[in-house]
Length: 52
Image 1: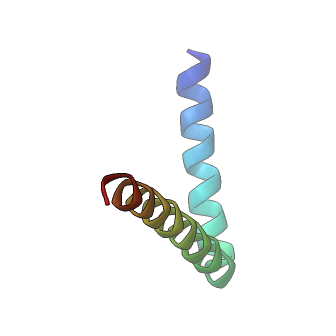
Image 2: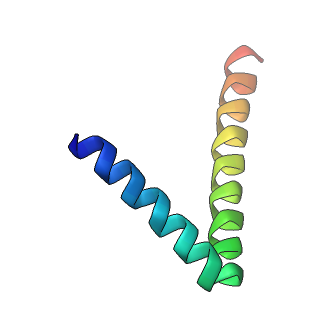
Image 3: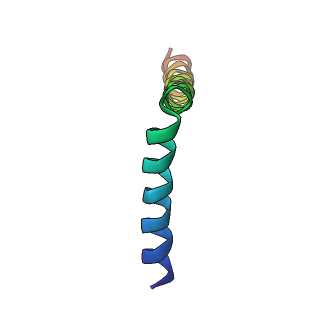
């Protein structure tokens, strides 16, 4: 029950944040995307160096 309430509360907060601060929300998503890209590149470089 608590998990369901926290999930819906988190979703409501995300919608509220995007609705009232769209530029800031876009910056957060760009930052997260860049971080995930860097992590993926790091793993790729690791495995390339491991095999080579």
